[in-house]
Image (cartoon, rainbow, N blue to C red; front, top):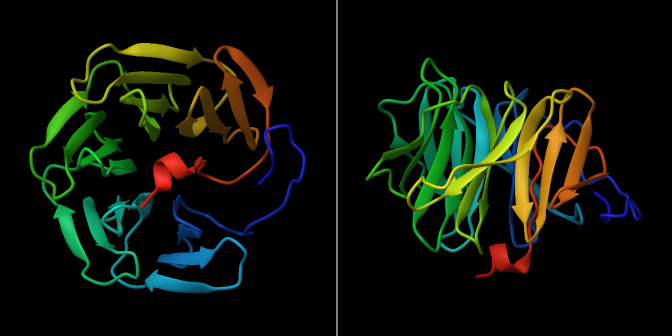
Length: 237
C-alpha cells in the first residue's frame, strides 16, 4: 500500500495469493493455497477465516457493503456463491451455465452482480444479486477477461483482457457504448479498478500496478494478483 506519489509505502499482508475485497475497515481475501476466505482489520489487530471448506478454486471476490454479503466465483466447481460477511448463511447463487467464472463485482445500490467467464465462449454477464435475470453484456471480441470494476458515479463497467492487453468499458445498464480505454503490447493485465478519474491496473508480467490520469500513465506500486480502490463513496453504510 502507498500514496499515489509512491510515498508512505507499507505492507498490509505477505504471501496473499488470491482476490481481495473490503468492507469498512476490514479486508477480505482468498488464500488459494489453503482454500480459505479470510478477513482482517487493516491495522492487523484482528483476523479470522470465514469460509474454510467446500472451496474449489476461487478466482474472484466482491463485497456487498449494503447488505453485508460476500460473493465469490469458484472456477473449480463452476459456481458463484454468497455468504454473510462472517461466512454464515452460505448458498449457491448461480450453478448453471457457467464456464470458468473469474472476476466478479457488485453494484448494491442497483442490485446487480457482474462477472467474467474464461471458458469456451468468453463473456461478461450480469444478474440480480440473487442470480435471477441473467444477461450477457459482452461476448464479442473478448478473450481472457481477467479483471472487472464498476465506475459507480458514471454507471460504467470496466474490464481488462489479458490476451488483447486492453482495458475497455461499457454502459453497465445497457451493455452499449463500448470503448477501448487503454491498449498495450507489453503487459499482462491481471486486474483493474476504477476510482474517480483514475484507473488502476496490475501488470502480472512485471509485478507492477499502474494508474493513468486519463491518458497519462504513472508507475505506482507493486502488489499481488488483484488491485482494488476503496473510498467512502463505495463503502458507505
